[in-house]
Length: 205
Image (cartoon, rainbow, N blue to C red; front, side, top):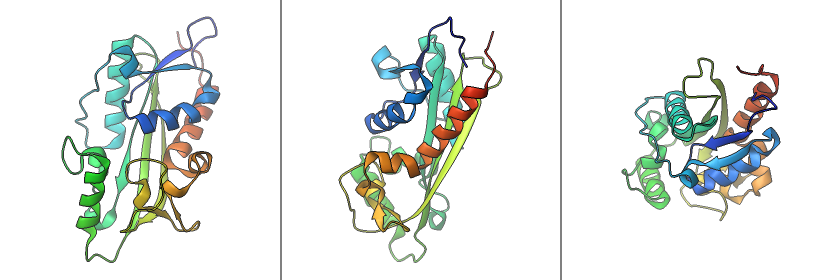
């Protein structure tokens, strides 16, 4: 955890407005003054990893190096076993590098046509680093299980939320109130785990 006599600013390595909104609410207990990397003129890092963890670390190191601040980054997405794990790390770009959420959802539902198994989960890898060369980054993960439905439902959330049914609630992620989603979601789980680690982490030199 940062020392009390130093700045508590941190850069949040995302340009996704929906993710920024969720993360800001979830990370409020940390006490950092969070700044989105876009506000600081920092371009998105290339995501060349084959896992969510690799991409989260890439993004955190890039943001920390550019902002000269501690950084928090997550990489998250939808995993569908019937599609071999896709969209996976390409969740935001499933239908192409310039794809919209609507494009990605169309491709998802089209890819699942005729398949019985609609099991899916959202996965989040969340990283905190004090500095770009931090040798001991904090890592937390979260998994939120559900299933994919063909017809979108709900106006909330973003991305694949309207098609992600939470079976025990009978509602999609997009039909949940923000605080309800944050209490259940992969990102909410990862943030809770990260907060615990941050509170327990010794001050860094």
